[in-house]
Image 1 (cartoon, rainbow, N blue to C red):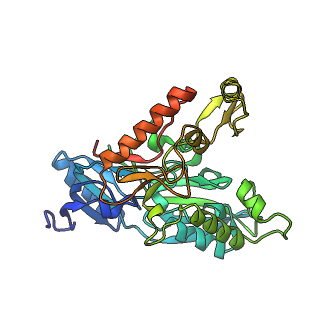
Image 2: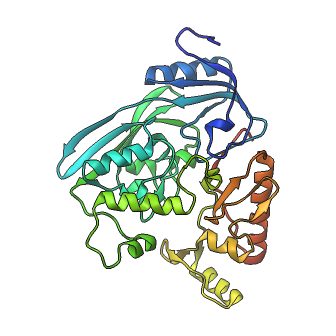
Image 3: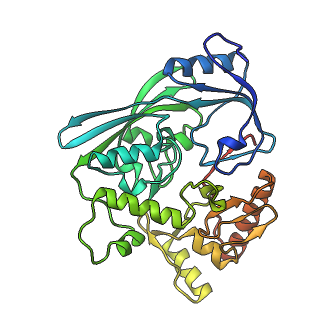
Length: 350
């Protein structure tokens, strides 16, 4: 249906096929936009009908309500990557609709260091600054210089610096203080030509132990292989990939809480440095200690057979079932360890 001359809107489009979980109901309206002008037009159309708007990228970090979404779902199809140089940096500016893994592959092919450990992560460039995407010792906050956004309230475009985005662990203004205010249309990354790959993460240290310093391409390939072994690389026909990635954030607790947990369990819980006086405990370890192991099933949903943090849809399930499993896990972990887990994926239609 074409309610306007410039936009090609669809009614009641199923959202489940647009997500990696494959769950959820339809969008009342949906539209793909291939330019900033079309994005503004879509928002104006929704505003004139008092409809809520949701921006859908790769659908890899999204849990959609069984009832769907009663407003307009906008899919940014903005494309393009440009390159420039500033001092010793290579500046890559990518449109929001670009494949993130494709962007990483392009950066690695240019021999530019800074995002090689983020290979294999599904989704689009526009989603990376929202939750400060990170993995295997890197996060996008390490390289983001500027983020181009559309302010939904004024329909004006702005260039936000990395400082203005206020990045922290899995957070930015886009999912905290300014949630639903901005729509990302492009991201600018500062990478290092000829730079050394990042090998800080234990899996990578083990993989390259005793070998010559690997290339950026070798590190990116190894990251994809590790992600695949854990069911965290999208592979057609692999049931373990019907997930939204890591479902829970690694909780940050005080050193005192960590010590108390160790006394309770009679073993020192694994941890990683966080802010001063705090440590980060692997959420996967907490789930396993609480009895939620790999391969756990509850109806049509469960836990990946290869990655404890990935809640999966086994087929013919509902979002309600998935959230019931989430609630069971959160309640059990909190009851046993006095630590409340927070989910990473975004909820839509609730």
